[in-house]
Image (cartoon, rainbow, N blue to C red; front, side):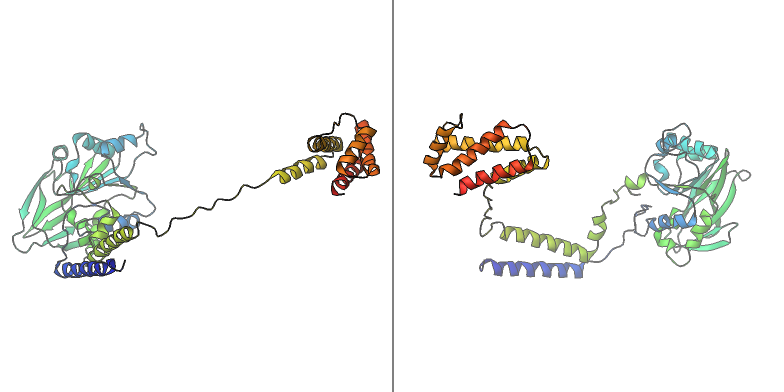
Length: 401
């Protein structure tokens, strides 16, 4: 152990030095991936919005949907096998390109029944464009990557949106049937928020999903834009789409679901974690062999005969079965005489008394008194507690003398 100690100290010093050097040299980077994940605290996650939904829709249930709309809405329809009938607003923030025709048909049926669909994304699946009669185009932001957002009817105007390389806008839509709710502006205003009636419900199409992310909600007073945009939705239950968030990120990378993943991204915790692992391995190596084996304690077997006899005798005594107990005590006494003294006990007469007195060295009068009492007990049919006590005393006296 004395030889190993210096090596261990050197190894610890190297680990600490390496962690300090790497910590100093490493530049902390921000992940700007647009995941739109409600569990992500990154700039372009939507965890803040997700946590605020219960406040925006008070007294209504917020459900997170981890299934395709086609399967979830079908299961939770009037003829489905789900736990409830889905009614309210279905909200999709980003990544709507995963929607296939079957899911779009189910969402539009959901809207046609009097419900609401809200989608905020840069583009929508082609079937939505064709069904709702809208077209989307974009304009590049060549100056300073800043756009300005505004909403009609809720007094939100020129809300700044930075880090925005381009603006998407509706290049074609039905100006009579569709209602314009908002604009984006770089050099001039473009329509980027529409209310489209469909059947008995409405579809809200929004073209700036970044506005709903953590970065913009927490910056200055930009949260007011989110409150205004969602205020168009009716007061009802909300179904928050999270199907793609547990599949892939916006750029196709798998979104980290492990709670440990976030901690490992923190430099201090990461090195503390790895250092603990190294020390744990070293501890196991140096303590693999014990200095002395554990000696197992083997308890000796207990003689429970006396306890057993006491238990059985108490059982008979408590039940007042004096006859049974007297017969067993006589039988046990005679069996002991046969086995220990080799005397025949079939007839308890004067000859038996003489043999028993001779072999045991007891007085003939005492032996005769005991044998006569035994003969008396064997001839009786009714017994009292006093008979049992007298017999027991005489047998105990015979053994003690």
